Image (cartoon, rainbow, N blue to C red; front, side, top):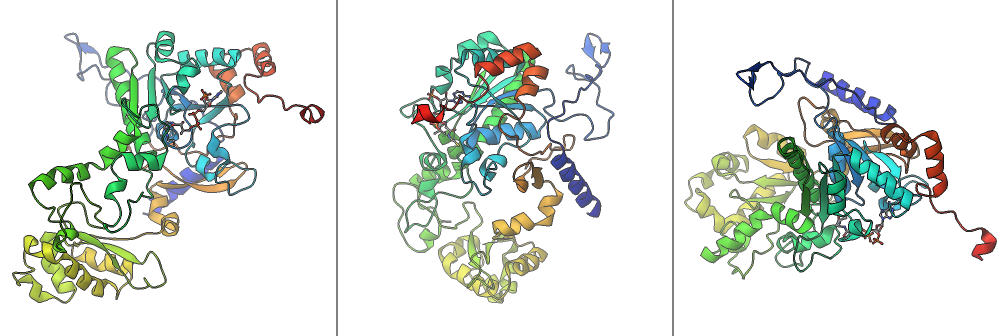
Length: 483
Ligand code: COA
């Protein structure tokens, strides 16, 4: 454990120091000698690497991403690709950049946490995509990159001249990946933000308490959730390209992404035709179901009933609660723990179907027990008996949790203008590809580096580009003229 902690600390420190992405050149793995026309290891794969795990390059090493994303949904996707080792080149409007750089600012003059926590491990280049020279630069980038990712409002990419036909003709291997609010249909032209997607994807109508209005959740399932879906689409398209040699379009609509995450509620919608949803507490309370899946408060959503219960200190601490699941196999242990051994044999309580109409009373009784302990004591005691419970952790507790730092799920990075900040590292752990978590770039920090080292512009060409206004903000009018 001590070693793990040390490693994570060292990695974080190293990440904070590294200002820009270092492109590591890897030798291609040797192919196994052919045997009867096939490679000895099968499927044309190289021999298994003999390098120690974690030292054979990152999973997406060599993948170049032209990142046209902004706000949250698209940046979540490209940040994950960057954590996995892709070279992500974020294109931003000169002088302006991603709008979130300046939104919800907490440190004057510094990029906001909104931006910095969604754009780590990327490089930033400023290009006016509507400027003729800007278009030339973009064309070179399209030829150079493997994937173009964007989440503009519908039609914006086409208005820049970057239609699928143009991109595909310029680089037939390029994958063009988009987040949009809706897929094809009546709403495809609409602009969409997180909560609109939560509402349109069925999450809001099924979240909250029956007697209250629909609720949105704090987890950004519309934005970050769709970004995750898009990332899977992109790596699948990259994999298919190995066979076909050509790129394709990848679309993740936010409505679809939210619905995918809310699929158990569409399951319940169909079950309604065949009778009441007996595991919903509303059933136990004798309240009839309507036409659609109702809001179910803190009901578990699965086959094992659960609820959020108060713990010691709830009167003053808004997060002194635990989630408690009355999992059937450990029911007798629960009865003993809460001082109700008679429920083990009482026909009204002994079986799951008998308990369903009494869930409210059962959870009220369990709560009398949980209120005598802190949420962590409840967790410790219940774990001994394999009873599934979960403390309601505040963001403060999560930020300070040592085990999340040790695994690299929460990472501290250093930033030149805002100082140290916490970000969420890669939640997906690969045993041969340690996450590459670094700070976000300053606006246009890598413009010259990319033009020179990636696209091969000469010093003279660079000077011309600078003078043209394609990578710099338009000159502000002189005061006298402006007046
Ligand atoms: N150079 C020049 N122009 C640029 C540019 C650059 N580097 N980068 C962006 N622009 C322009 C675009 O061309 C577009 O101009 P146009 O509409 O005149 O053609 C404009 O900036 C802004 O694009 P848009 O996407 O419409 O931004 P918005 O702030 O009005 O809308 C959203 C924001 C999020 C509502 C919208 O982008 C959207 O619906 N996206 C898809 C769904 C989505 O991802 N939503 C979740 C966001 S977290």
